[in-house]
Length: 294
Image 1 (tube, rainbow, N blue to C red):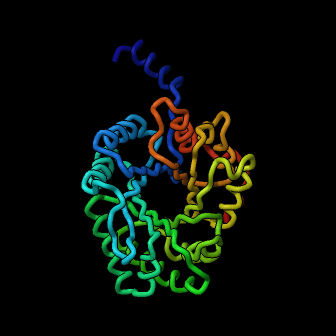
Image 2 (image 1 turned 90 degrees about the vertical axis):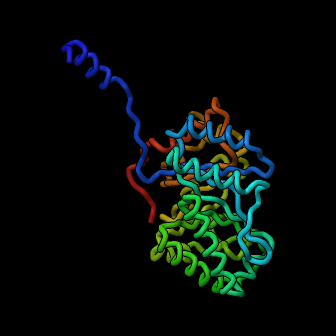
Image 3 (image 1 turned 60 degrees about the vertical axis):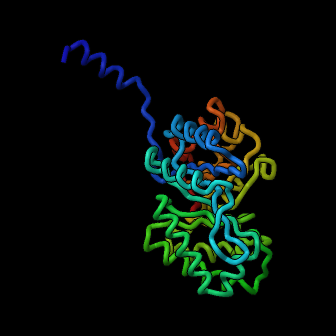
């Protein structure tokens, strides 16, 4: 190689910033498409392709646990949605964690009839193997009471045990930090105890931009203190600044020890500062000298 060319190459290497992701950080985008056509799905694929360095995975809201406790779809064109997800995992290397909505009484039925419940779990495994999923989110919006909690724990253990055989994760979406209005919002300690034996269990407490400002750090720290390494942080975002490192809450969230973010909803526009926020979260070190994660 020419000496001057080598010198220029070495200088360029020193002045060009090189960013690498923090190994255990994740950014996942929920994709909600109740009436999306092929053009919309393609536009989202293009967004992921353009910004694939600023994202690690996605969660298409594709599935439904119906009132009979069976796995079905909540999208108008299941073939299009599932093939789209599979194509992204194989071409862009992103991880897919589809969302399963359970809001019609099916979860109560599956817990009461464990044969039916097992069939449901097996159906999700078949879909995961067919379309290259890494796991699922489950959002349970059914009324319940404290008497069902033990049955839910037993069913959850069966679910996690089966998923371990296939290297699949299960993330429970809850409506609060821990114990809330629904029976699946168990005490923090219950989730932590389960996670100790089932590392494929995670919890996604949803938060909104409007509900918790200005002290995002306190909220995020409560999540980490309560749930430890089980926590994913689900953000229901309607104001873009939340993901702008210049005027949002990302530094506080990072310093609280949160390792995973779920963003609602759909890929941002290409010129949206949110993409920069995604990259900031994935690459920025925690600046605190100590951590309170336990």
